Structures are given as structure tokens and as C-alpha cells.
Length: 433
Image 1 (spheres, rainbow, N blue to C red):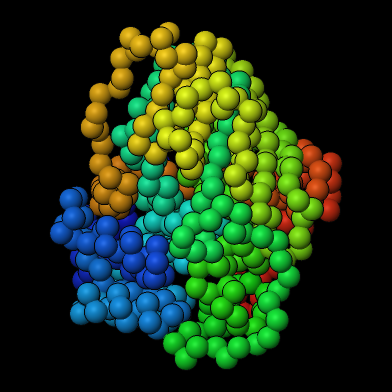
Image 2: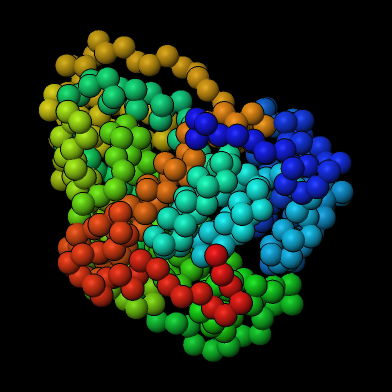
């Protein structure tokens, strides 16, 4: 991304349009829940966001759309992102994609092929093939991209990366990450996610919801409130469980600190795989090759209230331990949360100088600057693509039910051909990449 070239809108869409170096005209695809949070965070009055206009809003849910449109009277509204992109090609410079996971890549790729800079919520895609496609398209068109891993630009995150890269705890061969995030509530109740069959009955589709558009490229199934709103993450057709939802956040930290890319193997432990839905708990382990003078790494993920045994050796920064990353080095350990970290043994590292704070722009500000100037972003698709592929490979191992050997170059499992059915899927008629 260091060589990114911003293409003026008048080159892409015809003469007479203002280039993005002056103002970035933005379209938001998905404006409810997380989409609305992003809209609020990117409003022009926020720090670093003055040089953008919210010109288009798009959502399949008319209630979400009306609520968002009430704050942007001049913004045009659409239900179908495909129609929106065709109609507003000469109007917009960039898109923010915050749909359910199964629509992330169809929307992002279509926008990028039209020359639009792209901020896409995590995970980058619903399956590995989608993610690889989005990564390649972003590279081909030389666009400013950013995965919605907001923690990547945080001060604590950057401080931890610096300490690990500086060798503070020695060479790292082992990393543990865990998360108990839930979606069935509020309140958040660990274990609410559960394997289950499709719901019975066919309630009427709410008049405000364009259900066929909500399904997008996913296989057709009747509407049910067990999917929308919010609960879609637990169903394989639309999401990838807790690992797919939160893995990009936490695994991002060791990926960056240790310069990881594609794993060699992956295996998963959990309840027997269900054909329709994600498990209530999962433990996934990836192995990565050595990088230069750095040793191979074993990275393990835990969710559903599971924890690494090593936690018995440290005092938690937070007694609830909701989500953390534990680095195990030759000379000590570092445990990091969202806003804090601790080094162990504490007496050994008492004199360690903490990295200076603050530093850097916000995640969204960094991307907006890249849209205008071509400057690099920290979570561009060239970086976050392999990260997302790794996360999704953990769910592939769970669904396949065995340890997998991964050929990243050819994008296939080499020792279990039947696992490759989970690497990509056929799109429903009328949907393409």
C-alpha cells in the first residue's frame, strides 16, 4: 500500500467532478447497528473527518435506513447496493461496508472494481475464496482499503507491538487468544451461542425488510427473526460463529507483532460440528513457519469461556478476563487487553520503559487520509486478507473435524479434500463477484 495512487473521481466517472483530494464523497452500505456506529464516528464534525461528505446511505432494512437518513437530509437512499453503485458511480469516491458478513465481499469488490476506496467491517469476507478475491482486487486497482479492526490503530495495541518486536520477552513461539463475546442478548451471557437446527415456521417478512436482498449471495431460506437482526452470526450461511466475529480483532495483535502471514496447519477442538450453525465453544490452533531468525509459532484461540492453562501462572489485569492475548516468550510473558497490558514476571520487567503515548490518527482518520493522499493504512487488505483467511481456516478445521494441512498459494487443504467445500461456495443465482 506504500505505493498507493489515488485516482481522481473525474478520471473514473467522467469530467466535471471534484477529485477526492479535495473532498471524499462517501456511501455507507449497511447503516444499522455497527453501520450506524461507523457513521457516527465518521461524521464531519469528528476529529480528522472534516474532509468528507456522507452522500449516500444504503440498507435493506427500511427502519435502519430512515433513522440514518434523518441525520443526513441531503443524502440519497437505496435498498440495493448494486443499484446504488451503478447510479452513483460518478458521485462517490469511497464506500464503508457494514453489512452482515456474507455481503461484505460482494459489496466491497463491486465498489473497488468501480474505483472506490473501501473500508470494510471485519471479517473481510465470509469464506477464504471471497477474502482472497477482495485482496487481489484491492491490489489490482491500487485503492485505499482498511479492515474495520479499530483496535489496530489504538495506542495500547501499538505499544504491545513495539515491545514484542523489540524482543522484550525474547523470541515468541507460543500465543494464546480468547474471547467470550456474545450476540444473543443483552445481557451478554457466556454460552448463549449454541448449535441448532433451522428454526421452524415461516413468519411473514416484516414490511420494512427486503428479505431477498438481505440474503444476497447466500442460499435461499425463508425469513425468520432467528437470523435478522443480529443473530445471523451463529449460522454458517451468514456468519462464522464467535471466531469469525471476533478472531480478526484479537489474532490481529500477534499477526502484526510477529509478522505472521499464512499458517501451515490448523486443528480445532469443540462439540461435534453442526451442518447449520456454529458451536457454543471452540479451541483452534494454527502453526506458522519461522520468519527469518524468528522461530515457528503456535497460536491458539479459545471461546465459549475456555481459557489457556497458562493463566494460572499470572495475575489478571481484569478479573473477568473477557478477551485477551497472551504472548509466551523465551524470557517472559506479556498479556494484552484492549486498553492495557502486563509483563510477567512483574519484578523482572519492573524497569521496562513503556512506549510513549499517544501516537497516530484514529482508524477511520487514517483511512480517510489514505483516500485523499495515497498514504498507507495499517489494516489494508494486503495485510488483513491473510489475517481473515487464517481466522476462517479455524472454522474450516472445525467443520471438517480433523487437523488440516494448508497450501496458501493454491488456496486448498492438501490432506483432506472434503474440507475444501468450506473454502468457497457457489453464489445464489443473480449474484457474482
